Image (cartoon, rainbow, N blue to C red; front, side):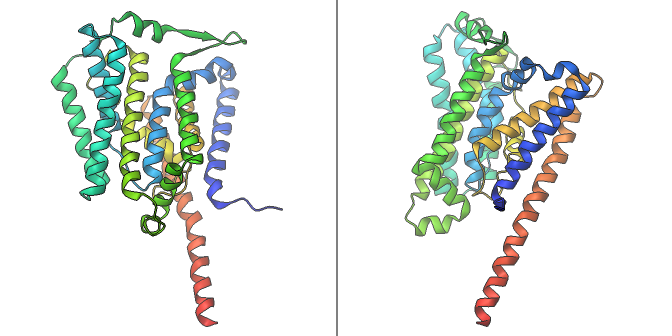
Length: 331
């Protein structure tokens, strides 16, 4: 019988956990099993899914990004401010994508060439982006643009009679692009190599400096796209939007089986992590009497469990390597 690869075990656990949780919700609440409820997991979490794709690249490389939620909020504020000044959407969307990518690029340069720790560099980015939101406005800016409203309200009907939103299509297409980048390009292979061992990647002649800067630039782009999708979802700009998005994205990536030390993980796992977060929130909504803070409590417990599992899975490998070296020395 073929033994399961250790690095695939967290993903298997994640999928199993999602199936168990969704089955439990279906048993407890009859309407939970409907196709539309399942689709709503994607509709309500499309922006988080896009953010998780970017965060997967960052964590796979051994880094972290705390600025994501603030950058998303800044994108909503810039979008809403420009739209109320009658700037066309064809200009607004490229502007916010470039702005978000620029923040990511700057953070990547600080991290790689000035040797600033990712935690500190992205913490500074978080404060900068959130502060910039308040410079635009301290109040909510509602979006009245007809095109944005049409996209927000658009419903694509399925053969079953259920519907999906444009946001879901954007998320699915982008997730496929992220999966392809990670699995089938030199850039993706270099991301894995850097997360496994940056020194080894350098010795192999891989473009480590360029790739690490590109990782944070790409993550900035993901924040920008997540911000656009969130703007479609909320039809407003607000400085306090997505306060904890970076934490939710990190939680989804960790629960999806990506090691916080880097080198092991997948886009598919992160998406499953997003679905688990959405399922927890949906069950709490169906229950009706529990506070939304129970979502945080359950997620915290799950993160502890996944980190413990990762630690236990790595420990035998280290012991085995140590024993092998001792046997070689004895020989």
